Image 1 (spheres, rainbow, N blue to C red):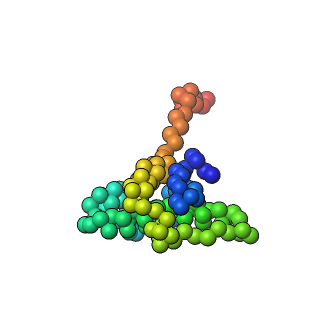
Image 2: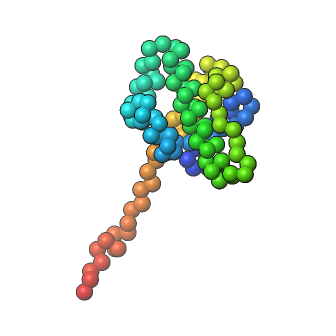
Length: 128
């Protein structure tokens, strides 16, 4: 598991890593117009059913990223892709609400920037 860029949830007794990949970011941008619009869309869903649909879609998307990465590295032994219907059957609305923190964690880790500062001396080296 890539804990540096993922969050883990349990769906139906199985652990799934949620990972924000470039592919997932593109899918989210296509659906919501960008990552910055995601929170607004989830909070402003017109009704409860739509809100659940959006959370299920997002969990399925992020959980499948780890499966797709695994399948890319293990072509001889691929895992089955998670379907939205599977997530709906294996979860309760209460569980979906608890996954929001894992979604947020995966998004944060996926967009985290590691800033490295240069040593002052190396910037001011005189050539001569």
